[in-house]
Amino acid sequence: MKNIVLFLCVFFWITAPPALFASDGKTNPKDKYKIKTVVIDPGHGGKDPGALGYSTAREKDIVLKVGLKLGQYLKENFPDVKVIYTRENDVFVELHERAKIANEAKADLFISIHCNAATSKAAYGTEIFVLGLHKTEDNLAVAKRENSVILMEDDYTDQYDGFDPNSTEGYILMHLVQRAYLDQSIEFASLVDNQFASRVQRHSRGVHQAGFMVLSRTAMPSVLVELGFISNKNEELFLMSEEGANYMASAIFRAFKDYKSKVEAGIPEEGIVKKNETVKTVEPVKKEETPQIVFKVQFLTSKNKLDQLEGRYRMIDSFEIEPSGMNFYRYLTGNFKDYRDAVMHQQDLKNKGVNDAFVVAYKDGKRIPINEAIGVVKN
Image (cartoon, rainbow, N blue to C red; front, side):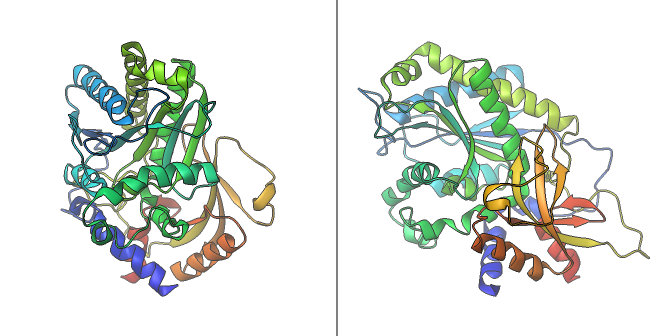
């Protein structure tokens, strides 16, 4: 267990941008969080064509077209937002480089764009992914396919610490790294999903969690968008068309517009890491008071408020429900002062089949990043 905690701490320290840990002591509670930089990541490229379509489509071509159109919409409508592409033409960019681009830019949002494919030509619909453990074999299959690109990199065993995209064991710890940004990632993913379904009239396969390497190394809210199945004849034709590319790009743009408006209005404020500012809560704790740090285990995020748990969650006797902005609810269990006790409880839930359980932290009743809570307890 100590090795797992140490691995996560080291991995988070290496991959997170320096601003996450920087503190100049000048935080102002009246300052509003602004989305200043967005990184658009058209998947694959160059020697990596990505998924191949029903007839002639190549994933790398479709996602580049949609990505460039999305960037153009953002530049035209939000001139104050800096737009950065991981690629603007048909070149191969390694996965770790894509994340590095976003981290070095201190981006506020990372959007990776892809197309799906399946052996069944009947499969169709959009899917939006955030980082986490896959709940189904289908989600695992998508993650394995997208992650397999690292095998084209010359030094992938060194760059990814021996990670094998075809081994399920390699995905166990991955989803914990980006935990501080999960809520914001889910919120943006849900807005994209809603735009695809309501405005573009695409069949929605929902928002899911899975172990995507490119998302695991970004230190900001991040999503991976699957535009549709190019292995399906009708979806291939739609996504290859100029009209289809325009519709999909504009749908993601509208989702960004809504997300930016809600975040900058202060919904939600908790969990947002403000660039070039301290991660600590803006309300100072009086010197004579000792901050109350509590660790809990979150095991479910749902659009629905469930008064009674079912299925694999039924064995959780005691839990609490916490609203999480934009009609999402968090389900938590446990109340620990020792981080190690919380990790042990998390592992116990995992052993019982609750694979999405993870540790969260609260300071004086307000949710804070886990690394900050550990630092406060240590000091």
